[in-house]
Image (cartoon, rainbow, N blue to C red; front, side, top):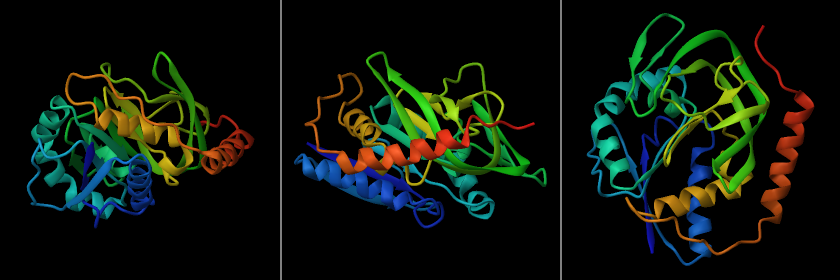
Length: 251
């Protein structure tokens, strides 16, 4: 078995420990004897929808988002085809915003989105910052806490067809009001959680790996269990920090 990762804009959207997330996927695959290939994809470079099992879009500031937004929006059809072929997608923070319909900054400038998720994002005045904890149910037999860190001014509003990634136990989430965080469309996931996300949540990293190995019609394989004591400790610390912060919202 081999997992082929396409990392979009690693030189632009890379401020939230995104390379750490890639390192986690590579190591957890390696420990199980699964091959791992990584390829960066910059603006203007080709994206073959059949070439990857998992596509990753990281986070960046408004300037970097503006630089890549038109290019990413033009890849909407390729991303849709990759999903239909069985690829998984993970988008974090700025990448999450740009996979929606549009992102509007505080100056009123509207960046186009790739349209993978049914949501839009509008920048607010204050930032939503701190540890965050979610109650996340990715499938009926897989309900787990998801812990991370959020730092965003964008308020993401889910559309009628959108399914949230999880419910906020503590923190702000998508907009500080709805009680939802992130967005899920099948094996495509968007979230504001970073920190980085995957070292603190090994179960979620394995969910992504399994779905990247599935193909368009198959069932996700059972991955060999790993000893995750250190990772469990990291999640516990993050979750307790979030709980001490409390379930906060915007006034």
